[in-house]
Image 1 (cartoon, chains in turn cyan, blue):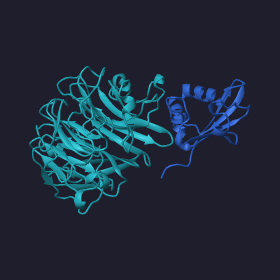
Image 2 (cartoon, one colour):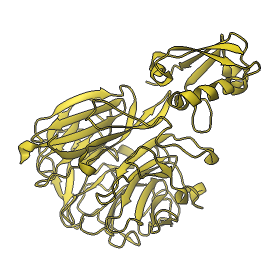
Image 3 (cartoon, chains in turn brown, yellow):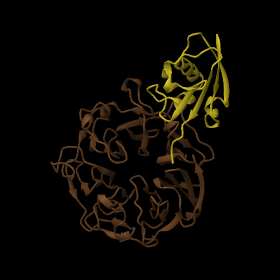
Image 4 (cartoon, one colour):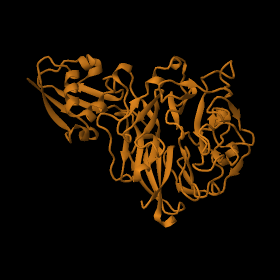
Length: 367
Length: 95
């Protein structure tokens, strides 16, 4: 079965996009760079409908940001002439960067989400050809109080709800987690229990600097958050968050991954505190939990040491392999690692690329 | 009608129908904004490379009418003299 499968990885960096392919997830063939010198902060691989569409949010400092896609693994790229993601005229706003591209679930064909800077959510219903601004979040009364993280003010995580198409969680830096239950018409902050250390009130209603959120495979109301200081889980769709940081060497970090099928199995990559932002003691490791964050085990086999490079918020991914899920990430030092056995061991996919900003991987049958 | 020549760098040529140099015919009194609007009708990809959704010239794009940067003139309201050459260039930026 493995021989018939091709695993595809998209690697967005500070200076271009690379694609990697492998039959066995051990030996990788790299192609690229595509969009040389351009920043690629977001990538996605959409395998719905029997087609493999690779998306890239490309940021050209001269000629502006855009979203492109390829249906032939990088041989050709297309973009909407009018601009796939653009702000309506009445907003008097210009798109600064596409931070996050998220195809919706398999039973919602054509739906693709984009999280953007300035803080906004866009939705496509035509396979990512054209996106429409979500007005509910754009017109939110909290908008004037949202801030900007170091990288900019953006929605960086969008989590569709597997059970209800009207429910969606979005996370922003800084603003925290917001949830809609009416298809995006209205949004409420859902941050109770998430602590901040940069405000006199340690538990504000909103304003948290959440770095990434994701949903558990077994329960769409169970979500995880890697915060700017703090690792959390909610079992009630964000109504209340509790810390699951015990057992980790640090509670700072940018990524959080969930197994696509196994409930309670998640990964994070801890970094040392806000001031240093690199692997603790120079030991780059992934930490996995198989009990929804109650306990953690270090996964380090195959990773270099020492390594003082951070892993950024969208620079990690899992694939959807039917047997053992792959775990992937890239560092700011331009190295990309892949694990074919759920983090048990890692091999090196690429070295000395520019800073890795975004990574996604998917299994393509017959590719 | 006045003939205006538009020149763009090679990276923009694809968005301008494969042309690095193009002639447009504009009514007397037209502004640079009028010219970009007209080009944008035919070449929407070119239009959004040069200007953002608000219609503003992107920060690291420079446009010259003859020898003069439009930022030292009247921006998009700068008038286009008969026979003018409009040169669009990327600024020196990045690292």
